[in-house]
Image 1: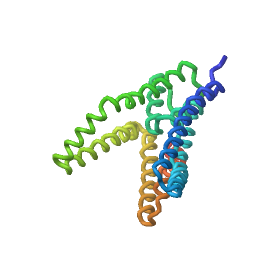
Image 2: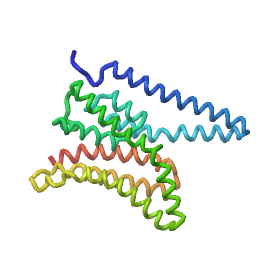
Image 3: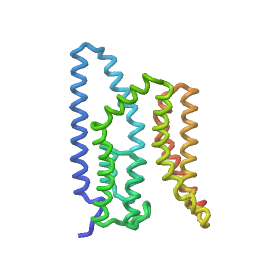
Image 4: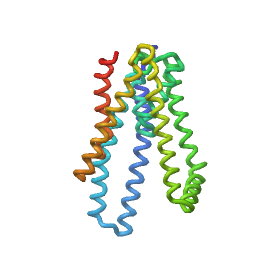
Amino acid sequence: MEFSANAPVLFVLAGIIIAAVLAQSVFFLVKAWRRAREIGMDMGRLKKTARTAAIFTIAPAVAIVISVMTLSKDLGVALPWLRLSVVGSLSYETVAATNAESAMGLVFGRVTALTAGQYVTIAWVMTISILVGIWLVPLISRRILNGMITLENRDRKWAETFSNALFIGMIAAFLGYVFCDVSTVFEGSAAGLIPVCVMLVSAVVMALAGLAAGKTKKRWISDYALPVSLVAGMIAAIQITAWLN
Protein backbone atom coordinates (compact mmCIF):
# COMPACT_ATOMS: atom_id res chain seq x y z
CA MET A 1 0.00 0.00 0.00
CA GLU A 2 1.34 3.42 -0.96
CA PHE A 3 2.22 5.69 1.97
CA SER A 4 0.42 9.01 2.37
CA ALA A 5 1.45 11.82 4.73
CA ASN A 6 -2.25 12.63 5.05
CA ALA A 7 -3.45 9.11 5.86
CA PRO A 8 -6.50 9.04 8.20
CA VAL A 9 -4.65 6.95 10.80
CA LEU A 10 -2.11 9.75 11.24
CA PHE A 11 -4.88 12.22 11.98
CA VAL A 12 -6.36 9.80 14.51
CA LEU A 13 -3.03 9.37 16.31
CA ALA A 14 -2.33 13.12 16.30
CA GLY A 15 -5.87 13.83 17.46
CA ILE A 16 -5.54 11.48 20.44
CA ILE A 17 -2.37 13.22 21.64
CA ILE A 18 -3.80 16.71 21.12
CA ALA A 19 -7.01 15.70 22.91
CA ALA A 20 -4.92 14.56 25.90
CA VAL A 21 -3.14 17.92 25.99
CA LEU A 22 -6.43 19.81 25.74
CA ALA A 23 -7.86 17.66 28.55
CA GLN A 24 -4.95 18.70 30.77
CA SER A 25 -5.56 22.35 29.94
CA VAL A 26 -9.26 22.08 30.77
CA PHE A 27 -8.48 20.21 34.01
CA PHE A 28 -6.11 22.90 35.29
CA LEU A 29 -8.42 25.67 34.11
CA VAL A 30 -11.29 24.22 36.13
CA LYS A 31 -9.03 23.70 39.17
CA ALA A 32 -7.78 27.29 38.95
CA TRP A 33 -11.32 28.66 38.58
CA ARG A 34 -12.58 26.73 41.59
CA ARG A 35 -9.60 27.80 43.67
CA ALA A 36 -10.14 31.43 42.71
CA ARG A 37 -13.74 31.20 43.94
CA GLU A 38 -12.62 29.54 47.17
CA ILE A 39 -10.26 32.37 48.04
CA GLY A 40 -12.92 34.96 47.23
CA MET A 41 -11.63 36.52 44.02
CA ASP A 42 -14.01 38.90 42.27
CA MET A 43 -16.09 36.97 39.71
CA GLY A 44 -16.33 39.95 37.41
CA ARG A 45 -12.57 40.23 37.26
CA LEU A 46 -12.24 36.48 36.71
CA LYS A 47 -14.66 36.54 33.78
CA LYS A 48 -12.93 39.56 32.27
CA THR A 49 -9.54 37.86 32.59
CA ALA A 50 -10.83 34.67 30.97
CA ARG A 51 -12.50 36.61 28.16
CA THR A 52 -9.39 38.70 27.50
CA ALA A 53 -7.15 35.63 27.50
CA ALA A 54 -9.46 33.85 25.06
CA ILE A 55 -9.47 36.82 22.67
CA PHE A 56 -5.71 37.25 22.69
CA THR A 57 -5.07 33.56 21.98
CA ILE A 58 -6.45 34.16 18.48
CA ALA A 59 -3.26 35.92 17.36
CA PRO A 60 -0.83 33.08 18.15
CA ALA A 61 -3.40 30.62 16.81
CA VAL A 62 -3.31 32.38 13.44
CA ALA A 63 0.47 32.12 13.42
CA ILE A 64 0.23 28.39 14.19
CA VAL A 65 -2.26 27.81 11.35
CA ILE A 66 0.07 29.62 8.95
CA SER A 67 2.96 27.49 10.18
CA VAL A 68 0.99 24.29 9.63
CA MET A 69 0.18 25.41 6.08
CA THR A 70 3.87 26.11 5.44
CA LEU A 71 4.99 22.65 6.54
CA SER A 72 2.01 20.72 5.15
CA LYS A 73 3.25 20.75 1.55
CA ASP A 74 6.12 18.43 2.44
CA LEU A 75 4.91 16.70 5.60
CA GLY A 76 1.15 16.59 5.20
CA VAL A 77 -1.16 18.15 7.77
CA ALA A 78 -1.15 15.65 10.65
CA LEU A 79 2.52 15.90 11.69
CA PRO A 80 2.80 19.73 11.60
CA TRP A 81 -0.58 19.96 13.36
CA LEU A 82 0.70 17.70 16.13
CA ARG A 83 4.11 19.33 16.47
CA LEU A 84 2.81 22.91 16.56
CA SER A 85 -0.14 22.10 18.81
CA VAL A 86 1.95 20.49 21.56
CA VAL A 87 5.48 21.88 21.51
CA GLY A 88 7.34 23.52 18.66
CA SER A 89 7.65 26.63 16.53
CA LEU A 90 7.78 27.41 12.82
CA SER A 91 11.44 28.46 12.96
CA TYR A 92 12.58 25.27 14.69
CA GLU A 93 10.31 22.83 12.85
CA THR A 94 11.29 24.21 9.45
CA VAL A 95 15.02 24.00 10.20
CA ALA A 96 14.71 20.45 11.57
CA ALA A 97 12.60 19.24 8.65
CA THR A 98 14.86 20.94 6.10
CA ASN A 99 18.01 19.40 7.59
CA ALA A 100 16.44 15.95 7.68
CA GLU A 101 15.29 16.25 4.08
CA SER A 102 18.68 17.56 2.96
CA ALA A 103 20.40 14.55 4.53
CA MET A 104 18.18 12.34 2.37
CA GLY A 105 18.86 14.33 -0.79
CA LEU A 106 15.53 16.15 -0.76
CA VAL A 107 14.83 19.88 -1.06
CA PHE A 108 12.36 21.44 1.37
CA GLY A 109 9.34 22.85 -0.42
CA ARG A 110 9.89 20.73 -3.51
CA VAL A 111 8.94 17.33 -2.16
CA THR A 112 6.01 15.79 -4.00
CA ALA A 113 5.70 12.61 -1.94
CA LEU A 114 7.56 11.00 0.96
CA THR A 115 8.11 7.34 1.57
CA ALA A 116 7.18 5.90 4.96
CA GLY A 117 10.86 5.66 5.90
CA GLN A 118 11.54 9.28 4.96
CA TYR A 119 8.47 10.45 6.86
CA VAL A 120 9.43 8.56 10.02
CA THR A 121 13.01 9.87 9.80
CA ILE A 122 11.86 13.48 9.55
CA ALA A 123 9.39 12.99 12.41
CA TRP A 124 12.13 11.49 14.62
CA VAL A 125 14.55 14.34 13.85
CA MET A 126 11.91 16.97 14.64
CA THR A 127 10.82 15.24 17.84
CA ILE A 128 14.08 14.04 19.38
CA SER A 129 15.86 17.33 18.71
CA ILE A 130 13.30 19.44 20.53
CA LEU A 131 13.11 16.96 23.42
CA VAL A 132 16.65 17.95 24.35
CA GLY A 133 15.39 21.33 25.49
CA ILE A 134 12.58 19.77 27.49
CA TRP A 135 14.93 17.44 29.39
CA LEU A 136 17.51 20.17 29.96
CA VAL A 137 15.04 22.43 31.78
CA PRO A 138 14.79 20.36 35.00
CA LEU A 139 18.48 19.50 34.86
CA ILE A 140 20.16 22.88 34.40
CA SER A 141 17.53 25.65 34.57
CA ARG A 142 17.82 26.08 38.35
CA ARG A 143 21.62 26.34 38.12
CA ILE A 144 21.36 28.89 35.33
CA LEU A 145 18.76 30.89 37.26
CA ASN A 146 20.87 30.88 40.42
CA GLY A 147 23.88 31.94 38.39
CA MET A 148 21.96 34.81 36.80
CA ILE A 149 20.66 35.93 40.23
CA THR A 150 24.20 35.86 41.63
CA LEU A 151 25.50 37.82 38.65
CA GLU A 152 22.68 40.36 38.96
CA ASN A 153 23.43 40.88 42.64
CA ARG A 154 27.08 41.57 41.82
CA ASP A 155 26.55 43.79 38.77
CA ARG A 156 23.04 44.46 37.47
CA LYS A 157 24.21 46.21 34.31
CA TRP A 158 26.52 43.35 33.33
CA ALA A 159 23.76 40.82 34.07
CA GLU A 160 21.44 42.62 31.63
CA THR A 161 24.19 42.74 29.02
CA PHE A 162 24.86 39.02 29.43
CA SER A 163 21.16 38.17 29.18
CA ASN A 164 20.79 40.26 26.02
CA ALA A 165 23.88 38.62 24.54
CA LEU A 166 22.36 35.17 25.08
CA PHE A 167 19.19 36.25 23.30
CA ILE A 168 21.13 37.79 20.41
CA GLY A 169 23.15 34.60 20.13
CA MET A 170 19.95 32.59 19.72
CA ILE A 171 18.70 34.99 17.04
CA ALA A 172 22.10 34.85 15.30
CA ALA A 173 21.76 31.08 14.93
CA PHE A 174 18.60 31.55 12.88
CA LEU A 175 20.09 34.47 10.95
CA GLY A 176 22.93 32.20 9.89
CA TYR A 177 20.34 29.88 8.40
CA VAL A 178 18.85 32.80 6.45
CA PHE A 179 22.18 33.99 5.04
CA CYS A 180 23.81 30.59 4.46
CA ASP A 181 23.07 30.53 0.71
CA VAL A 182 23.89 34.16 -0.12
CA SER A 183 27.18 33.02 -1.70
CA THR A 184 25.18 31.58 -4.62
CA VAL A 185 25.04 35.15 -5.93
CA PHE A 186 28.70 34.81 -6.93
CA GLU A 187 27.80 31.67 -8.86
CA GLY A 188 25.24 33.48 -10.99
CA SER A 189 22.15 32.51 -8.97
CA ALA A 190 20.11 34.97 -6.92
CA ALA A 191 18.12 32.23 -5.17
CA GLY A 192 20.17 32.70 -1.99
CA LEU A 193 18.82 36.23 -1.66
CA ILE A 194 15.20 35.08 -1.44
CA PRO A 195 15.17 34.26 2.32
CA VAL A 196 17.09 37.48 3.04
CA CYS A 197 14.55 39.62 1.17
CA VAL A 198 11.63 37.81 2.78
CA MET A 199 13.16 38.35 6.21
CA LEU A 200 13.57 42.08 5.49
CA VAL A 201 9.94 42.39 4.41
CA SER A 202 8.74 40.63 7.56
CA ALA A 203 11.05 42.76 9.71
CA VAL A 204 9.72 45.99 8.18
CA VAL A 205 6.11 44.90 8.77
CA MET A 206 6.94 43.95 12.38
CA ALA A 207 8.67 47.30 12.95
CA LEU A 208 5.72 49.23 11.52
CA ALA A 209 3.37 47.26 13.76
CA GLY A 210 5.53 48.11 16.76
CA LEU A 211 5.51 51.81 15.88
CA ALA A 212 1.74 51.77 15.35
CA ALA A 213 1.20 50.00 18.69
CA GLY A 214 3.41 52.51 20.46
CA LYS A 215 1.65 55.55 19.02
CA THR A 216 -1.91 54.29 19.33
CA LYS A 217 -1.39 52.48 22.66
CA LYS A 218 -3.45 49.56 21.32
CA ARG A 219 -2.22 46.21 22.56
CA TRP A 220 -4.01 44.16 19.89
CA ILE A 221 -1.67 45.53 17.23
CA SER A 222 1.32 43.99 19.01
CA ASP A 223 -0.53 40.72 19.51
CA TYR A 224 -1.30 40.41 15.81
CA ALA A 225 2.07 41.71 14.59
CA LEU A 226 3.56 38.19 14.31
CA PRO A 227 0.83 36.58 12.16
CA VAL A 228 0.59 39.70 9.99
CA SER A 229 4.36 39.71 9.42
CA LEU A 230 4.24 35.98 8.59
CA VAL A 231 1.50 36.50 6.01
CA ALA A 232 3.31 39.51 4.55
CA GLY A 233 6.52 37.49 4.30
CA MET A 234 4.77 34.61 2.55
CA ILE A 235 3.07 36.91 0.05
CA ALA A 236 6.37 38.69 -0.56
CA ALA A 237 8.15 35.34 -0.98
CA ILE A 238 5.95 34.51 -3.99
CA GLN A 239 6.76 37.79 -5.70
CA ILE A 240 10.44 37.80 -4.75
CA THR A 241 10.94 34.22 -5.94
CA ALA A 242 9.34 35.03 -9.30
CA TRP A 243 11.51 38.14 -9.57
CA LEU A 244 14.87 36.60 -8.62
CA ASN A 245 14.50 33.24 -10.41
